[in-house]
Image 1: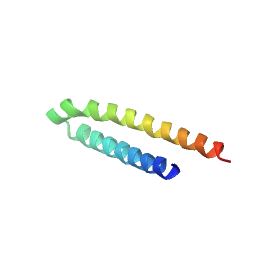
Image 2: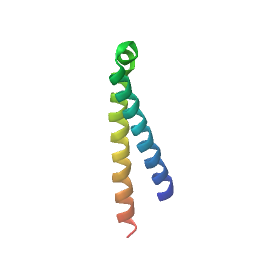
Image 3: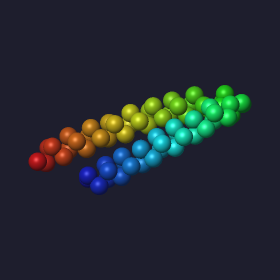
Length: 67
């Protein structure tokens, strides 16, 4: 089970990084794509980051429960 959660953490972190970089690049370029997707990517980053933190907390409590 810990391997599964670890994999989910890595995926969530990767998606968070992708949405952050894509959002920053769009904001730096400006224009119509930024107007359409810039805020959506930053909002997605916040949700993904929250999901990753929740997985970290879950993994922490699961590791303490088996000690």
